[in-house]
Image 1 (cartoon, helix red, strand yellow):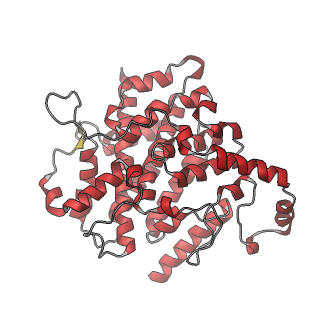
Image 2 (cartoon, helix red, strand yellow):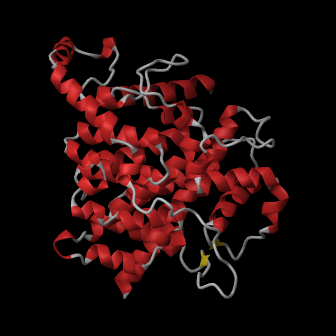
Length: 388
């Protein structure tokens, strides 16, 4: 069984090497859960590279905008490189002000979803869909929202696993894995494909890349991909969801709008097949073989939704306090709600005895619960717009 899992991981890594020339650090972290990794990579490849309403440079620029909200240098650099690789205009990497007006229109919904998703409203959707020449189509907006939510939640995983602090812009091989992703190499076409996988013509092509082009791209990557250049209103951050009667924020009740009964069908109809891919991710992470009991997994999931304003009427929230120790809850909340502030989150004592794969599983649960929460808020707002 172990050999089978190793072969599965090797195959996934080989596919990544062939398609991207490298195995990124996130995939290496997730490799201890091959079943989930396969589902994750399939979804990510679909939203960033396969057929869809948005052009490829737009997709990676939206990912940059999302990662920048949490100052996630790792993802900002990675998607900046991919943006250039698919033909994106290097000038856009100077910052948000250099991007087309249509992309800048996404800034508000980006920061709301990232920090206070319960504020996502029908009016935000209306503004994007009725902005004259800069308006978005419904299909384009749905793909953009999926990319934003995907990258916001991935920031949680990156910081939860301390990947961002480990990120260094060098093509080094660690622990026997292929070299991690280095944006400069991808930008100039040299994607670190191992010698055994590269053809002679590819070697010749790489040698012909001129120093002037290399220097120009290097300047773009090093000077224009500071995450602060892609955000506005930097002081906006997570705040405690208000549940007092005098506050106007209403609890999002899953009984009224759920992923299974509402979100899945809407997103699948407006962005073909993405609902199935996302659903597979949600199911995969909760069914992974683990030392964590089903009750503990559900407590983690429901606690994250609770701090983001989503409640389940059929769940006893006393289970959260019974199953999750205080330091564990603080860790979960920090990684899920303000990962950029954690930088290097302190591993709670309750996680310390666990194997690395079990700790990674906790971060996968946090990531997927946050992803679903953001999607629920965005899709509910789209639904309200459609029936208004």
